[in-house]
Amino acid sequence: MRINITYISKLEFLYAFKEAFFTFITKNNIQGGFAGAGLIPYDLERVIFKLDIYIRTLIPPTLKSGIVLP
Image 1 (spheres, rainbow, N blue to C red):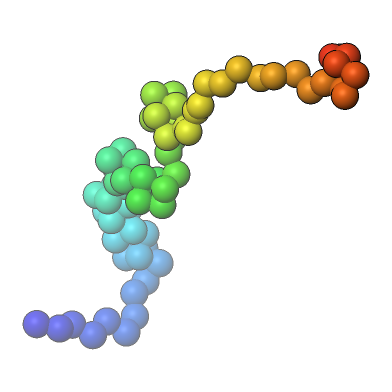
Image 2 (cartoon, rainbow, N blue to C red):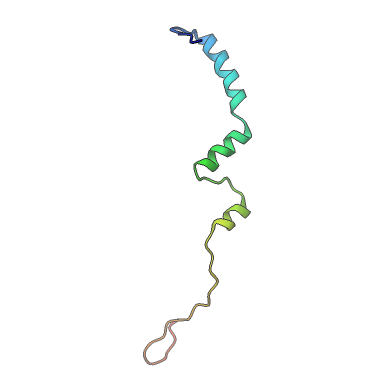
């Protein structure tokens, strides 16, 4: 069944908007939207897990004469 609505008053719109807003704007939906977009709210464990960290020892640059640069 399809209903064609051609007019809605401001009060009817506000009532319908309030019902839809509080039904669908939930914590899970907001977090799912961020995750779906690839944006991660601040969660240190998830951020660190996504980083490509390689531990390495830096070797200081030297001159041809063997003097270590500061």
